[in-house]
Image (cartoon, rainbow, N blue to C red; front, side, top):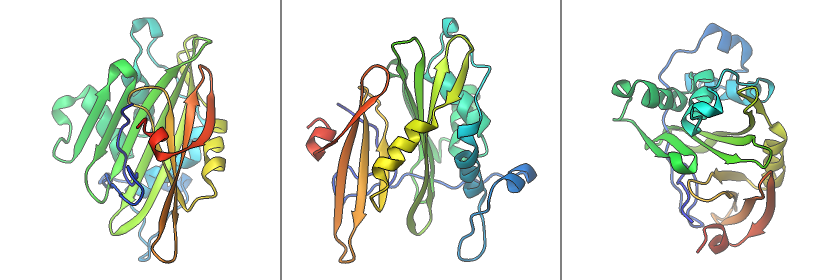
Length: 249
């Protein structure tokens, strides 16, 4: 089963890949007022960090409304654009919206888009050490709703630290809206809290999420632990698995 590559995700234990960029936009006054600042050693907070913190602190409290009706051909693009427009101060989100709505203005020198509309998957990211990255996919539920997931990462120049966010929403075809499902995000965080760091791979094919827990020893040793969140038609069953099982080898 093929799965999409993400920044700071280990395709094999000990092998790192970074795919990220910094938002060059300008932070708004409301963003500065409502988001707790994140300062580096020089006391500087980047626009990208402010944008990430805004998403981290507000996504679970706010529904996204006004999506096109399902009978009008609702797909992952419409779901992803709705989320990314709401949080367009994060640069990868802004570029994803631009790609699907104003293609001639898309920054193809710095960003790329992977899309598999048939399988309900799209990703927009950059291939530099400083990067922002957003991936979206959805699952069809037995009750006619859709579960939508967004995985976002922000890298920092000269650092292995990655700011990240995993957000789940329930799309209701009756109201054409997405309602946050923070309990699913909290479940992932609880599962992975025992590791030094973790990363997520949303499926570009198939239905299962791969979670990777990273532990770094004082002697430069490294250990990777894998979990599968297997889709059961309405929710996920989770289990710890080997690397081969995680990647279908």
